Length: 251
Image 1 (cartoon, rainbow, N blue to C red):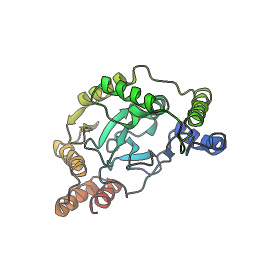
Image 2: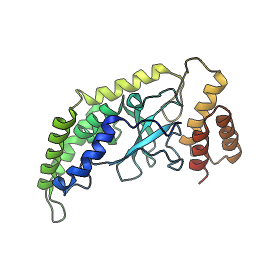
Image 3: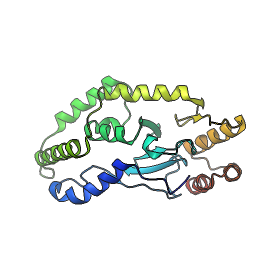
Image 4: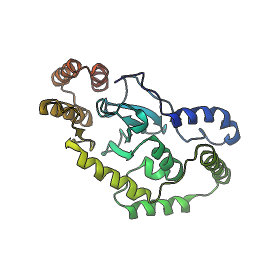
């Protein structure tokens, strides 16, 4: 993985904007609601795919979002799929957006859907209703102020960055995952799968990359196997991915 990959334009813009806008929404921990910034470090959660670059964190339960490079198939991070990584959940890694621009549309207007997994659309809609019924002020939380400042943020990102809602967001995510399922050549436990390269590489290589995903999903402690796969990755030029695999699984 090339750590010199250019950060997506919208991500750079949002980071800069937060620095100047934060004082206007002081009740919010972060205007975007996320801790933003590309993270090329080899350390990280065991289940964060080694061929992904984290760019946003919720600050709770280790939940974060990353750009998937598909082991170098994707060269432009503007075009990379966005995955949600939830280390504490059974479904640890899930695709949530086609690209980073779509991700921020989901995040700002459908945060619950971007952050959580719902079995079906009815569950999601029920969740929204429950959230609305719980919304009230308390001795410790000024909900009215929070809602007002969130509204200011939405106006800002809409007018400044042209970030707009995605129509039928639940269907959008579901269709994206179906589309991905037709693109992969090997299905993996983490739901991502591995794609064929162009020009094509051997089936053995594809299966080895799929094994990397399996090892991370299961938090494997098989040191011998991990070392062998890491060496195989290095032979293919995946030095960062190899070092990340070792770092994240040798806990």
